[in-house]
Image (cartoon, rainbow, N blue to C red):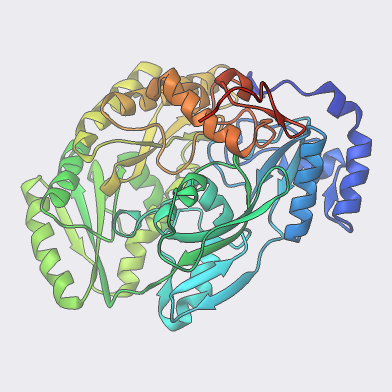
Length: 498
């Protein structure tokens, strides 16, 4: 696996593989267990395809009871489990382990309830992100978070990674649109967090679970809020001579108190790749392209356009097109939505990064990325959620050239270090997974990491759920001073405890 350090396979588990597979077939009968090597190849990687590993066995449950029995079985026998949704993770969050059960939730693919009066949808975790909008759009509703992979990514995976999308600036990430979940703990216990109501009392466990990357439990049901489609939506396509000018325009728009429905930016390599791929009518003589979508009542949208245009020109914009129809607005977005596959046409391979910075630091970070590109002699195409500072640099390389993958990873690590240096964070929506795991100390000190690990211990004391992800080193809960209860008895029961 390209030298990536992962937990050492447990020999005792590997020796019992045939027994484990047979027991899984009893729990999940029919075609719900896959154990042949060739058949498991479809599951050997997620969206971070540089790393591949066959799992011990693939299990595809269909009911909550089956998920509960699988997890309890594995908990009782000290068997690792890696949860997986649609496998679109770009951080290696669903990378299998050689001695682990890969628990694939794709058969949980039904919408359970649509409640228009309360504006909620209850869905199983295998329902695609776009599938929720498709189910409610005939009544004029939609689900706001819209990652570029929305046609394929699952709502359960969105919860695991706290996914965003082009409209997250105004309408929030997954965390702002999920109201409740049903989940199964590693010991097989089924619990519910939240529900149809807006907020629950007590600790925000729903917030803890959203973005937990499969380390705390397995989601089996999701309740999300849906929104009424805005009366009007129009987009501006704004070109700039430099990326720094585009970045400053973003900061000035937000600084003026304007919150667009979406605000995305692409640099020259991404612009040309997207235009060649989609033919959206993008200007090819600019270094940066900003798409600003304004939505709401028609009068308000017209007013906001009148504010954004002069801000763009003050920052040196050389072109500013305003959509005159819904078809034209969608064509503006078509190139942005297709930017990732489009870049695949100009490079044999690319490495998609994900870091978040304060908006005001956009010019500085874009300049820093150009310097790093020269240092590593690798190209980079920038596509990002400019409004909330969530960067998605695409580092261009050729895996067939010895050493280029390593260079691309080092380049990416330096970009993330730069993000942290200017006051940003390691990830916005892709998660930490294995990709950023060893960079966690760049952002967190040992005390921070220990506290995060204690949360993990509270949910999964034996570290059986998705081990090797997020935390830079494997430790036992006992090393963090966690109190153990054995056979119902605490150690030294006579000592007063508070």
